[in-house]
Length: 165
Length: 279
Image 1: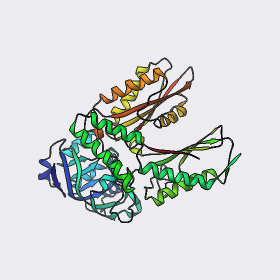
Image 2: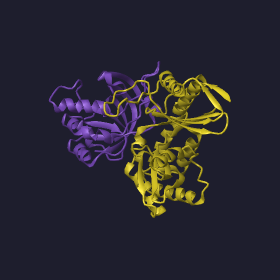
Image 3: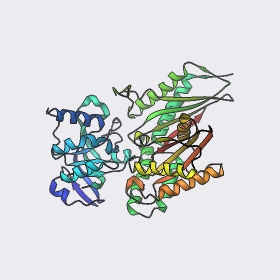
Image 4: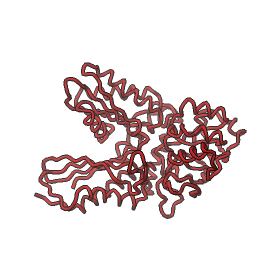
């Protein structure tokens, strides 16, 4: 299976094929509904967001609390379409990759293609398994959001399928 | 009269919350394995392999099967010869809060649907009680993630509508949900009663073994037909294609009014989680 190293580049994205199974290794940010709402509102009012998303990949997940002796709790993907309403502005600020589950809206599919970005799906409901692919995790913004805080996560051989490119 | 201490209720609820979140139902696991054997698409087989491995890993390492450890719904049948010592609701909620704190489950409940502030203890839960003969307490805990809960729907059909219209409604619900509901799914359908009764039936429907079928012949036929139609959609496990979009269909029905035919569809993900105990 093809290995992809993160952060992504537009050049690498151009070589990805729809439906291709890949293993992702490197750095991703985690963010879901509440963090997306806050990021989008901040960007819309021309204020600075607490983390740069340029060239980043966002993984839509809200993990369970971390048990002692583990790196992260169960951390499967959440439904991506709920993030559609906030995705366009993030793409405009150079977000390159997204990982989640499920289909995206027509508008977002065409926006992802237009911006030369990529959307991967991974296996929903496999939270325990996917947590074993995480090698490091640290909250870097919006700590008050609890499970919905933004984390910097290092993954290794994280299974994904190219869903929109 | 038999007295049951609320402490025992709290302990039982705690035990069931933990069991439901860490141990995938045996009938679901067996159905996933059977689907894995029958699946012809290699991508779908790969996804099913991971889903099965995830369930085994969760049980062994005591990790939640899914990060969405759900909103707790308790179904409690109370024997009418039982006297509960202490406050029943408080006991259930203590059990839930303790399970979620001790087991590092996610607190996913917000206090107000609009203001959305997390309650940080996964409370409140939803409790359905009914009074039954006897001196026992039958407690079932269901935890459902909202990926699939968001896909659920109801419709009030006309009393003259045919079964095939209901079939189409259910199949359409699965089709619209694509891979968002985490297929392969277990489809619960509630039919009849009032809108609330139909919805409750659609939830209770998935408590039946996924391999089973209705005792009513015409309902069993309906279940079979829906399952065949859903699996011909070729959505497949997590939307990668293949023949396994649903593991099973369970329909529960109830008498209804001459003017109506309420139908509710409850789509439950491949991590359909609940646990039951009689005390």
